[in-house]
Structures are given as C-alpha cells and as structure tokens.
Image (cartoon, rainbow, N blue to C red; front, side, top):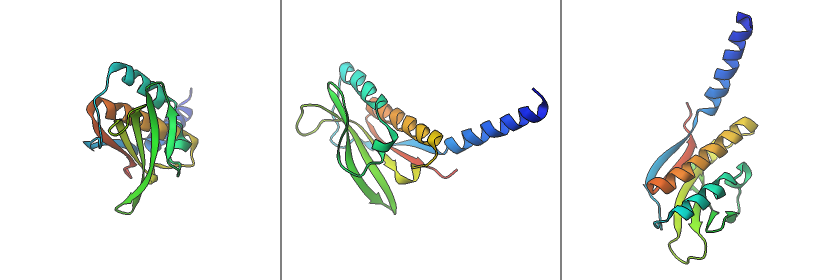
Amino acid sequence: MNQNKLLLLLIVLLSISYSLAVVVPIPGENIPNGVNSNNKNKKDLKSAAEDLNYANIFRDRQGTIVKGESVRIDMQGSYTRDGQRWFNLQAQLNGIKGKSTIAHVNVAQNAMSNNLAEQAHVTNVVIAAMLNSYIIGKTYHVLDNGL
C-alpha cells in the first residue's frame, strides 16, 4: 500500500474513532430502589442487555423494552435536568413488587445520532453501562461529553 493510501486510511480511522469516542458512561449515585441479586440474574441481565436496540433506548413511552426469564429492562420515561433531556432505563427483577432494580442507566438526548456507526456505538456503551451498573450498584449516566 502506498504512503498516500495509508495516510488516507489512517485519517479515516482516526476520524471514525474520534467521532465515536465522545459518548461516555459515567458512574454516579447508588441505584434508586436497588436490590442485591444473584448469578442467574446477572446472566439474564447480560442476555437482556444484549437485546437492547438503539430505537428503544430513546423511545418516548414507558414500558418493558426487553424481557428475560428473571430480568426485564424497562423504559421508565424521560426527564429534564439542567436543560438536558435524559432517558431512564432500569433493569428489574420479574415478579417482584416494590424494590426490584438491579441496574440503572440514564441516557442523555445529546447522545442521539443519525449516523448508523454512532448509533451502534451508543447502544454498546449503554449495554456496557447497564452491566457495570449491576456490578458496582451505581447509576450510570451516558452522554456526549462534547470532546
């Protein structure tokens, strides 16, 4: 490969990685209504999280997005804080009334994109944030940090 083609390829790859690198997960406060869980629930959460899709992360209506055997992921709605709209996703245990949240992720509207590669990146960041939320017991906030 000649140097010009190699340089062009490097520029394209850096542009893609730079544009995808601005959406970040940030751990925050303890999960509201959080409960302890077990390994089966962790496995079910991983499976449910992997079934998340971009459109459901930013949907307007409340309800179950993905339902697994023991865990479901619900869209709890959206809210506005400091001028930013956030979408509230919670992983909850099935069949339990009251406190049943095992993972919690808020996704900022500024993470939305029309670019398919960026949508895939946002979805992957949300999935990772959901799993990390379960592990550390903290709410994650996913946003475009503007870099």
